[in-house]
Picture 1 (cartoon, helix red, strand yellow):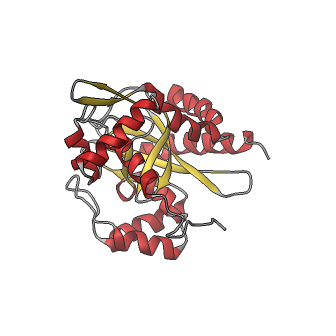
Picture 2: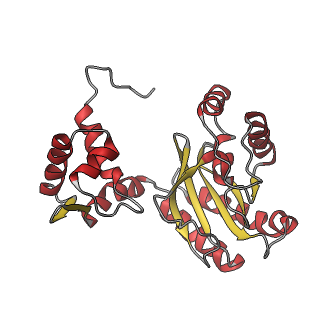
Length: 256
């Protein structure tokens, strides 16, 4: 059982420090103290203290009034990736998938209401969203997310569907809880999820689970393609066996 911190053990300053790091991102590579304070919901004085501390630790640099992250912060994410004993194995299998299908392949894990990309091998860019390791996307609208959600206990899935506020990315995006539940249940029964242009017009994606040697789900593996290039029946007929084979290879090479 995971031990949760009580109110007296909860370190709010750590939470705020991490929030400052997470405030930097696409469109916010450089930020002033005021901008960081606004993004994190803190005062300017608090934001300044955290930024100066992070600067002393080497995670942030300053130039004039602007602050930005340094490459040193990558060590935080790499510590997680290096702890995944299947990550390098998956990378090799994904390279084989891309070589055979000539489409980009990704692996993701579930983090709260999102999927987060932990491995990716690119072929050609097929959508305007720039995907890379660390990218977060809403779980309900992705094939990766639906596969991962299909392995959640019923009470966890109920809570997820009750709390999300689905955004309609395209005309095809499923936003009704009953429709999403049906799609997730279909993924559970079939052992894969196929999402057709719900995240972005023209994008089709197919995902399968990755299990450990004990049959527990670790992550999901997917392939993305353009609707104009690949028919739905081709995805299930040609792409799906390749993905299943890659998933099995990853599981087979994991340490016992």
